[in-house]
Length: 442
Image 1 (cartoon, rainbow, N blue to C red):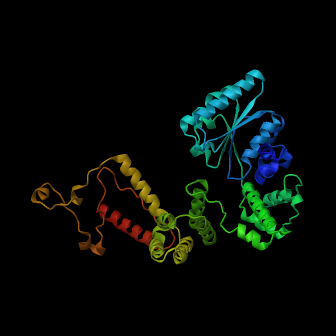
Image 2 (tube, helix red, strand yellow):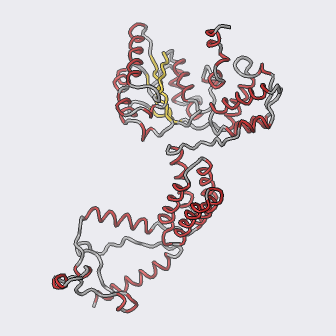
């Protein structure tokens, strides 16, 4: 067999590429977009595509779907990767599309993988050609288009959200590859038990490309050992590393830390533990996690249980002293405590309100009676005059005193909730305000 014959041999291509479906009926997953009657399916089947963005995790079929659309529409399929390409490649694609349009009257579909990798000027290069119909644009991204793509490009393309494949989808992909006599493994004479197929689907974590890559490795491994069936040991050796999706600094990262924070706020210790473990398992920096846990203690528990902040800080210190193996348990203890603690965002709300006033009102003068007076001149100017030393007052409280700039009045930022320690704080503040009213009536 010559070199060129080897290159043309479909079996020389990776299994994930060989098993791409040739029609929509063979496409697995994304039923919310491609079921009968859905707008995207109707646009494909009628040959009337529009520019679009596919947003979803890796291995959900973005590239495959784009190729199928081009096939149904009898369009030239041009693909470029934003990881490797630049404006020069975009111009070459435009030139090819214009040539096909002029010479053959054929439409072109330009597929841009990882489109979020292009900067603003590179994304802008597509706009006039999308606008005048030189090509139909399809972009694929794993990142939130709202943050990563230009508004001008988004306004010309419809965003479709592709979701991770479920285990039923992944199992169907495995079964199809194992049964395919031409492009799959039916002729290899190697079996894969049902329970091992389920394990493989679970380990692939919603990624169709990953499940096929792992399947190919494990079949080749069994074949190299001269086995007629994949063993549990073979599969275990392939699945040695954690395969959960966790894109540090990406969409999944911020979705998961949001879920952790909201679970603590919602007083769900079990869910909080789950999201904490998801992030630790995915490789999240525990120091980042502890910063967020400390924030939760102040933002969502506050003075309803001030011990929460101390426990969060103790967990941070424990991790730094003990390391990963022992320290992660301290983080878990803090997260569970905060989830179970009484909740109050009164300090958080008060801080935001006070900060808003500071930024809106400028540099209001400090009242004279609150100013420091270390020199005779300052005393002569009235600094600290008529200041009432609280410890010399009944109950150590100067009833009726004002501590705000004179132009502000007395805004009430901090409003304790009727939960935890703040019940007592609220009662005390209510009593002190009553003393203020009585003093000012005199």
